[in-house]
Length: 131
Ligand SMILES: [Zn+2]
Image 1 (cartoon, rainbow, N blue to C red):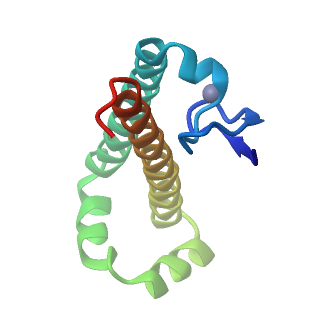
Image 2: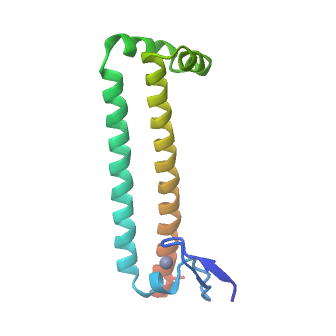
């Protein structure tokens, strides 16, 4: 049986005959595994909310910066110029890049969670003999 990497906890383990990408510990108690995944899901939602709040706070801090941002948000060339010039524009662009990096990290985590949920669903269906 080829070894697998568990989609929930990342542990490398012996594969199972159902072909589910869950380790033996995660397969043992699917309800517990599902609740562990729900905690991760709530955590990533909280991170996304904090990230949105942080970005909104930065934007609303200064009307002039907000006005400038409305004009340049879709102009990465101007973002680069703002970084070179420095000052408030540079700080805003840096905050925006942090926002985007956190957004991408959260999206990647959501994708991993979605993949893990799919494996749990398959394991649950196998367990009750539907598939
Ligand atoms: Zn596992």
